[in-house]
Length: 356
Image (cartoon, rainbow, N blue to C red; front, side, top):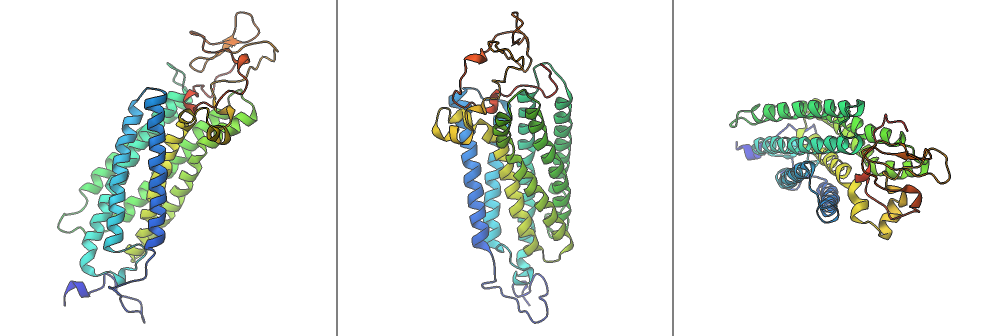
């Protein structure tokens, strides 16, 4: 009997294998995939426009994010290949056994591309957080936390990519390590996602800003909350896939949530630059308000005519004793600002532990 007529898994009692047109959820899966592609592509373009045309400055984080976007698009190819080979949410007894080696090959390629994507994104996000929130020349708790998370992620992803790349004999790709790798990756990602979410929001709420301004800025970074949700669901589905024999069905959920998590990570990195890209527009005012400029912090001295100067996240009393002045070049007198256009959180550069 040809392998083309043998199901990849014996069907339950009373059910016959359907190789011609098996039940599937391809339409819903493709709709979700397309939405993720649109969101990610839009976010990347917004950041690119903001960095190149508005700020006229490209950093290493932007280059790494661009590399991540390249592997992300390669993941898109894998997702379409998945659909054409087995389909999404197709039970394994409706898949010919001859297709299973190719199916596992797709899963492994997707895992390597995903982990390359997340490796570059996590480095970009954490180094960006250090640049934005840690004053130049300072190594505070925020700095060391970011550095520790960054090192753990780099070590894990490099080890995982190496392990996945050499874990299966090319002629015997039907091995059973994919779900284990998904579980380990899910745990690491969930922990790092939670830390990445908490760090900037905690820092923002330690700033001397009004609650309204803090809420406005926190909304931008709270996109990371959805990344954490995706990581939790993805971990739960990976555990389910590990204990299930119906791999083609259960791994469909894992693959889609992995892609969703990567999409959220791009949004976390790119969206904070949106106010700068749309500076002065009605959309920016509607979404971010005039309080999006976190660098324009409130005077805390209580003086009516006092002024605040800020640079590199440090402030001190001005010579007049009525306000605060930052060591070095004076940036801006804040008492003259009255609800100006929104600015990017690129301007955020105040350390959590600083006291004024």
